[in-house]
Length: 198
Image (cartoon, rainbow, N blue to C red; front, side, top):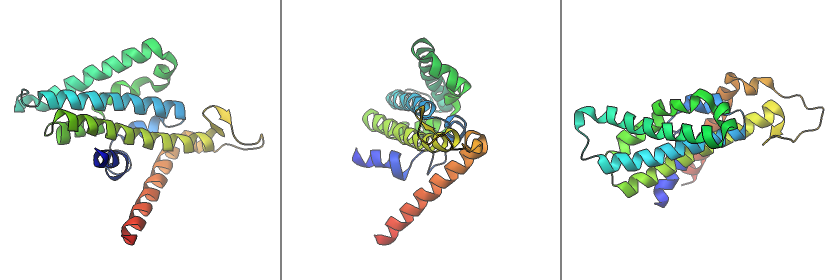
């Protein structure tokens, strides 16, 4: 279990290593509120889709496998979307179209095909949770950097003196690409340094 959690958070992080789910990572990571919301929604879908697909893997016919996965994932995304609209309308409005787009998020479908389809329900549940937490951690790191530099705030609170000029680029898509590239480079540098010491 510990190794699976490390895989999702560090060694096979969906955003920083596998480079999956980059569209929502770049688009909505302008604030911690958005990043946490999107990360938790994706974690929910990953966790329960992995469990469901693993439980049904011997029942689903091979020739409709992918279509079946998409139906399962779309059902879970609909549940998440309706719950957000009912209980967290501000987050639902903020994330907008990116909640329904979880259905086609490569990270979710990739884990269904590469892991849940071949492993037990428990292992698939842990994998879904670890990958979701890794996705959330990457979004939070990006969101914190972009919110601090782009708005001079962290979680809606000013953290710089009144003379601070926010870097407007960080709130736009290029700022997302720059932030993601810098975080990936830092992660690779740390991994290479750790590998060199070993």
